[in-house]
Image 1 (cartoon, rainbow, N blue to C red):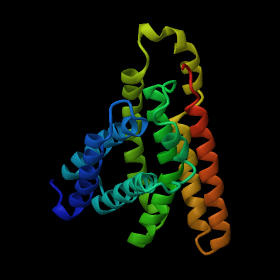
Image 2: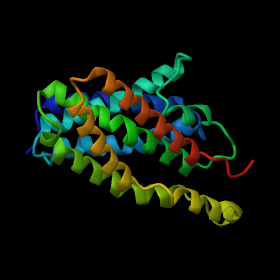
Image 3: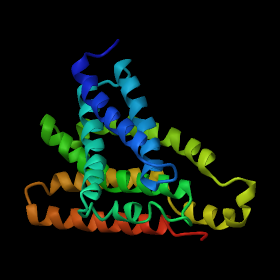
Image 4: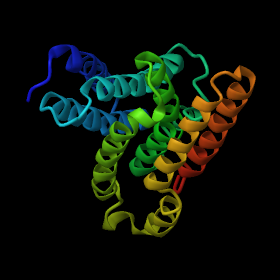
Length: 228
């Protein structure tokens, strides 16, 4: 059953913003590489939402939009020469480095967005809808499954070809150290912890800062230049 426009319109709005970014960012820009990946994911969420494939379309739409807003806010911060969250800084700092491969850019963006932004987006959604993280678990899992289905395609499309065999082994080793499934599991735990700490502002703020820093450190490792 098709869903009402008030469920799909907010997702359409963030898709339009990402399409505009895609048109503006030059080829080879690391943020642009991630943006194209994330655009494909968000477009698919919109299609599935419109087709009635989420049991709770309001929750799915809200989570998807709150999630996307975190990434778009980081883009705006960088564009204004302000400091984006620590999880995003490596990608913005190294976005034009010639020794970083497209697959590294894509996975570094996914790492920042899943490892940090998604946990905060779950809490944002709970506050918007007046629910608990447990009430969003189905939507969280469905979006995660969609990301997982795209991860293998991303690796296949962006992995170096035979002309780059000289870096294939270190790249395979580097990227094999990161797992989307493990990142999703850690994010769900972080979201539940942040929700439990919602009445302890100081502790919640410290937890969020440490999560941001840890995800940023992992992103910097993913973006290790492999060739000049």
